[in-house]
Length: 162
Length: 81
Image 1 (cartoon, helix red, strand yellow):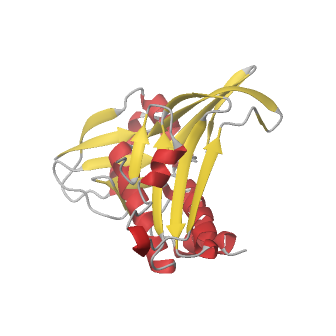
Image 2 (spheres, each protein chain N blue to C red):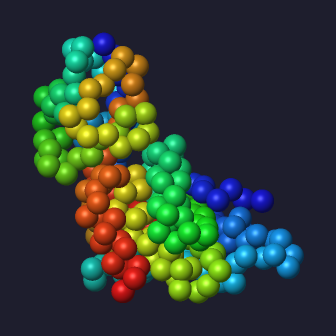
Image 3 (cartoon, one colour):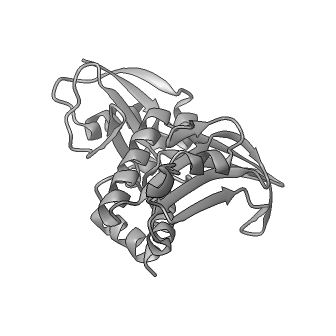
């Protein structure tokens, strides 16, 4: 079975990510809701025609951050599991850059945890995208990262529960 | 004492290296290591207000002291997902 948290240079398979948290306990199956989110390379960004993205990351730290996000989810929505796989390297338009799977007893927690997870990834995962577009390239600089920034956690929670 | 410094994305490009063995005085903080790097590569100073630090693959405040042999990383604003 695939690990819950992973970084890969290869194409991501949403089913595998979901399977990593899909308990198969027969009639005791605790999860009534499984949610899978895929982030995909968009063809246009700020009116540029995107050619490709190159993702760079600090792998051992990404895994620790993913585990932290998983623990935050477990604390906010007890019994809700989360798995995340992120792709690194060169990605073409339409390819999947991240898969987040969440599973819970009921749909509300599975949806909310999924949104929370992607917001937190964008805030603190040590990953950078270098965008190549027609006529140039640029490093995308998003969030100033700090793992223990409570205001950032609160913003992610607000997005999740909107 | 010597620490290993990892740089990513634009920071890596500015320094022209992913990892650097870097000597700093005993008692140096992450901020001191950053300042010392900036004196070698002045273009890094553009990130003074937005850089984040990590020690041994965990986020750390810039005021944290580094120790001999630490794996120190400097992260520009992140853009995963």
